[in-house]
Amino acid sequence: MLSMLQMIPFAVALIGSSIAAWWDLRTTEIPDEIPYAMIAIALLFYGTQALLVWSYWPIVNSAVAGLAFFGFGFAMYYFGQWGGGDAKLLAAIGFLLPSVSGLGFFSGLNLVFPFPASYLFNVFFVGAGYMLIYASVLALLNRKIITRFKRDVKAVSNVFLTGSAALFFALIAINWGLYTYFQIRPDLSLIATNSVMLTTATIGIFLIWKFARAVENVGFKKRIPVKKLRVGDVLLKSKLWEGITEKELRKLKKSGKKYVTVKEGVRFAPAFPLALMFTIYFGDGILLLFRIMG
Image (cartoon, rainbow, N blue to C red; front, side, top):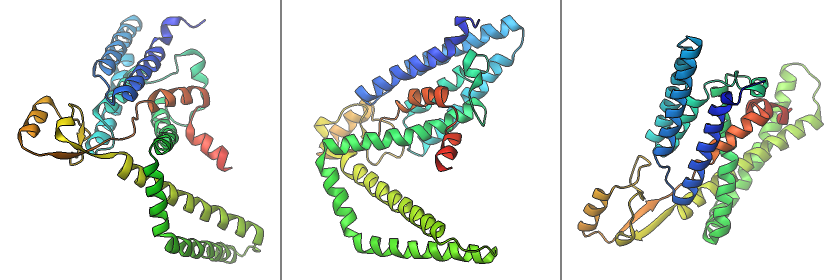
């Protein structure tokens, strides 16, 4: 029977990321103490394991996965997609779970790639659904987003309808051409079905993009008086997702500037524990996608 001690990395990863998610939703910030504590526990656990089995591989595997996740997270932070807390939290999960082969029933997961790679894909797979739900809730709370979305779609409605019709007939022509090229008897029903599905998918992607832009422009950008600016607020001009410091805030208040534009974003930390649970219960999101599409 599996010792409960072997469940420590998973338990710490799930509990730690859940606490970070709650904190992020509550304050928009992830305290550094949370991922740092998770990393410390991971190094202690795998360091002890390395001594017990007299092999350096446990600690090496932990370090490689953790540092690889940190590098990826830092790249997301550098390009302004994530906050620093998100990058550190991802790294902490990498340090804790370089593999699940020794975690009892988790070893039977249906994964195409090693656990870290599958988990990283699932972070974005699950995160996409989470962000859509988050943005939808925000839109329900702020009717201006819906108004902006409708206005933006209406402004391009003629071009949009014409383009959709042109795409549909172009897809029919392409499908027909492929049948002819491979000397296969055309299946009109299948050609029509494929063309409708691809056109519908393209329309859906376009509408989601327009909706995301409306959320970004209305829900995530605010012009506020400098006197209401707080430490941790992210200025619109900031390329990195990093809030202003106490020193920068004092300097801004002394500058005589009356208003600034700050930006917010989807509080992404909940995607990490959600993706962890998804990976444990459903395995690889890539396989799930193939099943859905098949």
